[in-house]
Image 1 (cartoon, rainbow, N blue to C red):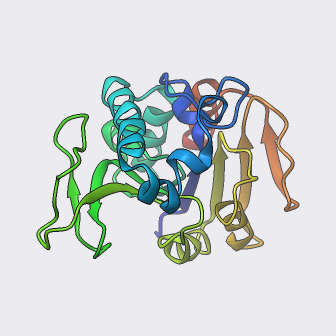
Image 2: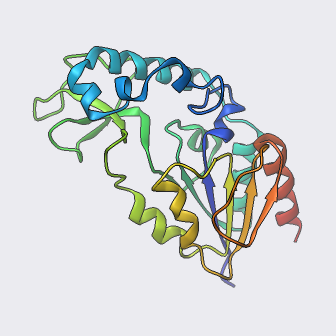
Length: 229
């Protein structure tokens, strides 16, 4: 018997409960930093040291964080279902919890890539990426992050995964960051659609069952329900 495929689409809300600050809430990172100063190609060219410091801070926080109940519950789903996680988050909490199929739309904070060949990606040892750290081609390494104004290279692959979903679980995202937010429209019409967030989220697609709950509370409850079916 073919196992049902569950696709999980996660945003900053699931990591916030592990102590990682979101970017867009009232106390979020964009209240402290201007996007154009730390998260664009222009910022990198204008002030590389500021950009490196910004991501060193984010990396230190990720290394100190731990997966929460929501991350762990998603791993339990793999006992019965085929589970693909697509995340907008740049941390590795899904992987550390034990999820075996994770696609990062916006890059990974614990990795760096070449500034001349984006396919040359390396893991960063420790919290800091230094000026002068070079790829094998001799160019400066940059954070392996999709910055504002850059294409999202994993978008088509994510859309293909969602197009095969029997169930789509959306967790902790405002669904107002494009093009990532458009991915929900690739789920088949027959798919069961669930959104979990403590705040009401306007969803530009009919058929979603919305659960107003935190990720750490709502995800384990829904997973237990699905495993009991």
